[in-house]
Length: 116
Image 1: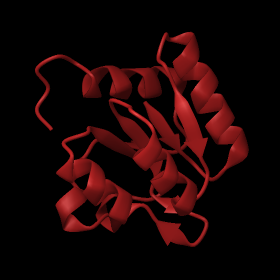
Image 2 (image 1 turned 180 degrees about the horizontal axis):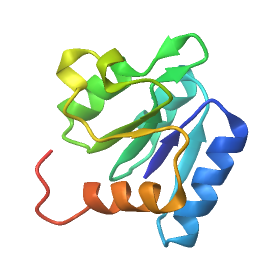
Image 3 (image 1 turned 30 degrees about the horizontal axis):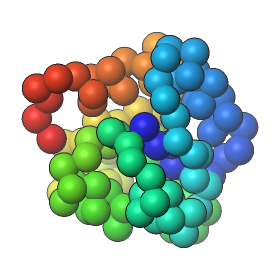
Image 4 (image 1 turned 60 degrees about the horizontal axis):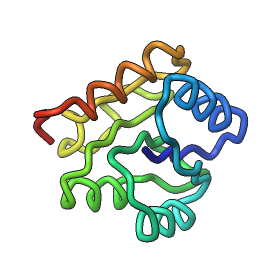
């Protein structure tokens, strides 16, 4: 799974939480450019992405993941209403998040038979 988060401390915490839960983590990517590079060069089964990376949004990344049928979830400090309509059905966590929320959303996204 890939973590896309521009806040270094949060990215580190997410990575530790997921690794302790037995999840193989790739990244984190802290910019749109590094996320695209990671997505193109790495195999992964799902992603969690902060909606805003500095002054950019991750919606172009989300479109690629959707087109490839790779499950993903957003993490944001904003309401789901700030998401484009096409992504409002995606799983989303509101910051601040706790470890059980992160582990649960990854488990749900990687569940066998899950619809993307």
